[in-house]
Image (tube, rainbow, N blue to C red; front, top):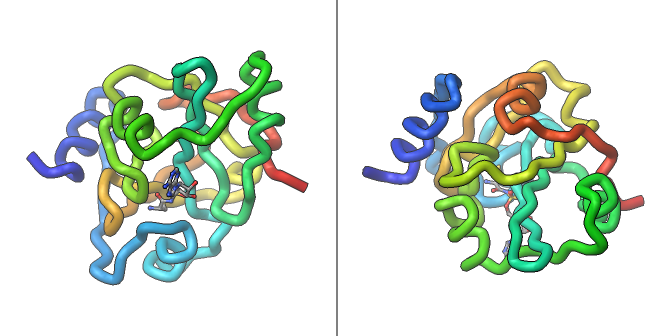
Amino acid sequence: MDAIQRFTQAAEQSGFSVVAEQFPEGTRTAKDAAAAVGCELAQIVKSLVFVHKENPYLVLASGKNRVDESLVAKVMGIESLSIATPEQVRKATGFAIGGTPPFGHPTPIPTTLDKDLLEYETVWAAAGTPDTCFPISPQNLEKITSAVVADVAAA
Ligand code: 5CA
């Protein structure tokens, strides 16, 4: 089974039907994804994994923002966070960097959702590979991930 199918099936188990679109030009970065989809950079969901004491934390950030991990640590009630290594991302999510989806992981990850994503009706996230994205409302994203909504952007 390829990574898109793997994500799509995992999402179905959360009760969400993914309609993934494949973009041959690639969607590895938020900038690439916005260009491929034809949407604003701010509408792209970056699914970023951070760690604290080997435990993963997920931040769903607007493509326009650089995440201030100290803000996220405060929201999650821990002292500090650092960005995960590619190996830690794969272990926590089951997917590689560049295609990491926002949910459908082997074990749910405590999640913070960037409040700036709530300004849009539809946002676009990775569907398991660096050339796929799928549309979702930020409200569904919040519900499925049981996220805490917060300001996560670095000044
Ligand atoms: N498909 C796109 C848009 S949905 C995507 O997945 N974007 S992303 O922002 O969620 O994933 C790329 C992110 O992975 C980068 O912003 C960066 O934080 C992280 N990243 C890239 N390379 C590394 C690396 N070597 N080690 C740790 N993190 C990395």
